[in-house]
Image 1 (cartoon, rainbow, N blue to C red):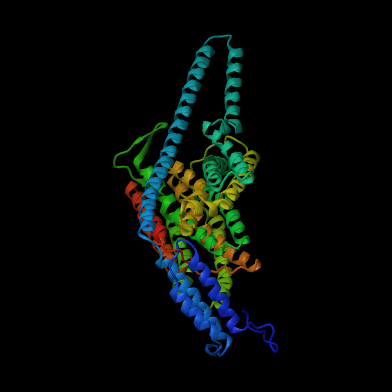
Image 2: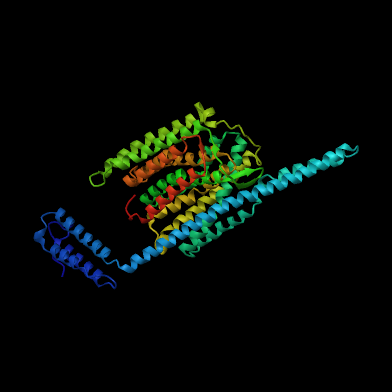
Length: 531
């Protein structure tokens, strides 16, 4: 029976009432099928019923916290060997699926490049044969009319190589998976089909954005470093949309994980696969073949500058994570420091853009003066990029909304999905373009895409999310915790060491990919704690 209410303080519950409610909840939990007896819970609840044990509201709060702690300990102790065996089997399945997906993705990149170059060499051979016929006809007298017809054919071939030529790729048939993913989201087909359909649709869309960005850089006639900056900026637009949506829905820790994972995947995975395939494959004419003893050179001054800025970004983000102790730290002071520090980091990003695009543009442009004619106009490439980005944003939104159900159904941890899986998909654009550029021996552009994208996340996206969280009244801070801050600093050191010689080979790429794989295993086994 409930105790009589307090007439002097009606807004304060009597301690015995709280104890009765806790005891009732504990008995219901203990009576649930499949749960262990909760004797410590009942003892704590009986102790909470006695009014003499409460001198103040603080004592009551401590008692309730003790009860909740005992509930959690009882829940953890009920973990059986069958559950542990299921986790071990799940990890084995994860390793197989992860390696298989990585192999399929890399094989897809390689076959796509080879098929594209074979079509190009076939087109050039047909053009050479037509020009030979034209020269033979020009040796005779009255063949001006046929020569005009040949010019029209060459113009038509160039027209076919425009925006229709970009879209005449069988791979882009997979773009039809995007409306299927949207239909799965709105028709409630299930979280797993929605997640997988939208995940598969991201790959051709990322390739379309990459090709449109490459044509945009060619139309602007900029160098490889500036082209990589443009590519990284356009590719990070999708990630910014995903992170803003996560922050609006209150997923602060998931937003931190996505930011951390984006930096790690660009510094290690994107750059590593670019160096790996660029060093293993040699371009002979217009075909890619295995290379022996190949080393790739790049512009040392621009790459060294990017690696030093990467160290600066890791210092700015890792310092709060290392010096902030959660056991004694104050959340309010952490937020104040993060909001003030975000302004400094944003100022550093603006200064770096002025350095890269203004005062030292010739140094960042590199020694390569290779320019090619764009296949489509500037306005067409910009329109294509905008439409593809809109479709990618909608697809990423549907995939993000199905992420929670996918985690619950498959049993994968939230930390692994936010730090590893989501950034891998969000950076598919930079990944595909960087690998293609490295295989074409355009290593300056590949470095500018990968490291430049990581710098934009570190110096622009992270402080921007802190400020947006401030406006949305969310506790978004620069504290990524010491484990993750150490991972950021070590990844920056690996990038700096890799780019310190001015030349690379495939083993440098293997080391970066291996480091990222170890981090993926670490985050898979890491306990589900706030990032």
